[in-house]
Length: 205
Length: 155
Image 1 (spheres, rainbow over the protein chains, first blue to last red):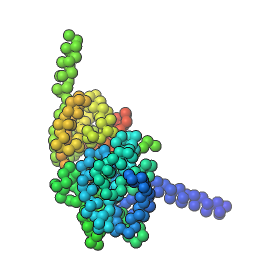
Image 2 (image 1 turned 90 degrees about the vertical axis):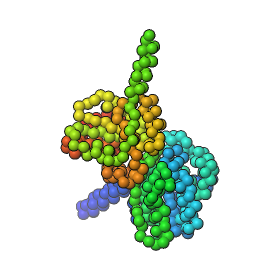
Image 3 (image 1 turned 135 degrees about the vertical axis):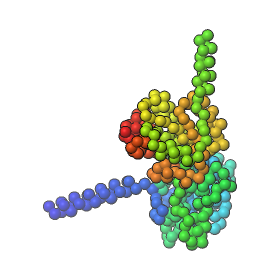
């Protein structure tokens, strides 16, 4: 009888645990990031652990088609140019369902990377599992990951800067300020911002 | 004759389509916080947002049915220099509801003032009962019947 009771309590405990896991959507600042492995536009696979020698990674959920992604494209390329040599490269991930968003197919991604001379990975999240794990909602949606010991930890979630329309008018460069602070071991000026943007085009489930 | 009438009808209705006015956040804030006794249905959309465009007819239909005490406002979030594109969209779809183009590019200054839960993705809809302060905020594409349900929830 007692065993029964223990079993019952364990079962409830497990249910609560599972429910809590389901409800929690995506990473928050300070969370450890799980390993992922996705196909790049050159056909090779790229994993988060490939960057373990770096100081961090600027993960950007992006796409070919969104006007905000287009407006930020040059700035994303510039971020990698500025920071990859300092141990903080960009990794772009496209999670849009190509059925819902024609123009975001793998072939279109290959064209986009070639045309804009991407010198950073542009990965396809075919199952949308990585976007769900991160809790990405729109494009471009940035997650600055900081290397801490053997892990990558989320340092910042949000927008690239405070002017989607005009780079020269942006007076708060959130991502640059955060990466600079990490590189200089200073406190982070911002850890979370929001941005209007195109929602990620989720598959019908 | 009938044809001429139809052509005239087409032009007169096209001419009366709504034109967007460019506003700053204070205008939206006044609308949200207004003490006028009615229910405000405020939809955030952009011409480039496919699910937004898809659900616009629901707001148009609600606006056209003129239910008592309900006011529909469409907040457009295209970039302000795209106003011509927005206006030709409104003319093409012959839209009649009020459209305000919100020219506030520093999103973090105002997104939380619309609703703290809003991630910034569109479409999004805010429904406020100005008499009671009851509100509903949804960040997803609405289906037929959703608006009526949300309105009854704030009554």
